[in-house]
Image (cartoon, rainbow, N blue to C red):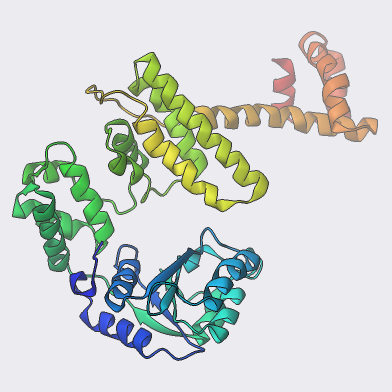
Length: 392
């Protein structure tokens, strides 16, 4: 991350406006920074606080989602003077993570604090133009961080290589910069992935990697987890994966036994997976979304560091068959339940009782007594598929 504003590349005019807002701050207005992920919004605020000698108080709206928790943290911050700095900046990151109704007035709580805060409040969003942010937009000055040109990103990557003593081909860095679609964070993640093992980035290696899908697929993420012992590489594995948490659990559960052939590695891997599942259960029970951090850390770094060393064997990672099996079982049960509902309707009882007490006796009748089966078919109004199911 840039330590000072002069380190921020490609946002000259925006940085000037950002600094002007804070140094000429007037109560009653916030600054709303918006733009695509990896555009430098958060890091620019940190750099500004460093340059001005201001204390920075940050809350993440994805973790602090409702009115009560926002009032507790943000409200307290606006009422207390800075202890060691000239003043303070209050940063509300990932405002997209809260919604007014669902999270019990989170956005409205931020709007109320803007009116009374003696310190500048800076809010960060990817897309602030939804209906839920209409009240917030009225209280804020909007400032867009536009997508940076690939030449700017190339310069950032080149500087990182020099500081980290990474050998590189300029063509390779240029390819990474162009493929990231303006997302500097994604470009740095790619650079780290290429350079993690031997501190070297070559054109051949980047070409073999292929065109970057900015929403990484799950297989690429699994490679980062299973084929590394570097905690930083592992932690970023699922950052750009467009899969829900339950699916990630299933992918790891399905493929870890193929990858980790040593019993001790596999045991530690499943221990990390089980601990992540414990936190997921707590999220479901308590709605404490901060535990998502622990889930992803255990699924990425926890599983990656479970092994003593990297396995060289290439594995063809497969999607879990568990969901398919559940679907097939549901389809099989659907016919059984449909028949039970027809029995329940005719016998004036519950579907559950029909399943338990009546249906088991119908199957032998349909298999051995054709005449009686025809009577029951007519009486219950069974269709051909239901009759065939009873005959099997």
